Image (cartoon, rainbow, N blue to C red; front, side, top):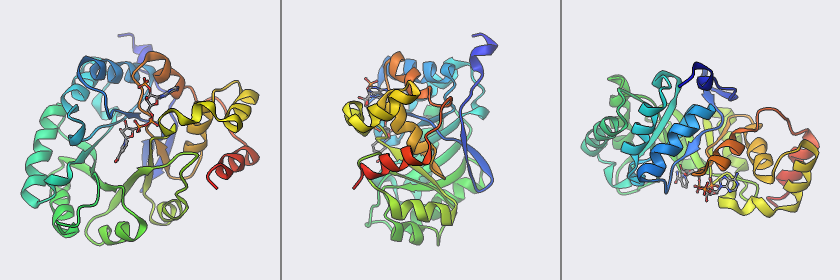
Length: 265
Ligand SMILES: NC(=O)c1ccc[n+]([C@@H]2O[C@H](COP(=O)([O-])OP(=O)(O)OC[C@H]3O[C@@H](n4cnc5c(N)ncnc54)[C@H](OP(=O)(O)O)[C@@H]3O)[C@@H](O)[C@H]2O)c1
């Protein structure tokens, strides 16, 4: 691979003093060779943030894609999530070790609890995750699909770096956005192109026209221009991978940002 291809023009959010690429690759429903290739291609295009989960059963393929890309793993913000059935202390430790092995990495940048699971106390799960942080197998910990009150509870047991939730032009997250700014955590937007729903949106298309961009690019730009927000669109094809990453050469003005916020009402 040419050195040139390893460059990235990605933008970053700053969370607790650390820079996190504001656009990442989602990998849910990517499997086998398609997953390996998508990760490899994304990294060649400049992506430096990859999202997977124990539940996606593709950590091995994600690890292979990273290895094949030739990009220094130190440059990649790698996220995985604990399966909700792995929330007991021993399962957190055992399953994270398995994830590390599959991902072929010595540490995970961000380990999340995938969904709330009231049958295991938060203290137990987050306590085990904090132990993994101490031994440096995990850099940061966080949650996913947590409402604001549960994020507050979680913060009693660990430093919460992220809450990953569904967020796009048709799904408001006002309370969590305020909380993310207040507590200085990353709000990672999943399903950021609303699984393709944004494609035919007249408002997004109209805004896109003035910038020479598609409605999906406007939706992604709108997300990452918000303080503390990252977006992780999933894409398999080269076209989608490329166009989702081609959002760092334009900006939405305040009026355009507001027009997208209004879609949520
Ligand atoms: N924490 C959680 O509970 C949770 C839940 C859901 C998702 N996630 C994470 O978030 C990621 C993204 O969410 P998602 O997969 O639900 O939805 P999404 O990223 O909003 O949508 C993915 C779909 O949109 C298509 N697409 C992507 N870019 C496109 C473009 N530029 N033009 C046209 N179509 C495009 C993809 O097609 P192709 O694949 O054919 O390219 C795929 O069918 C997941 O992969 C996963 O990593 C997390």
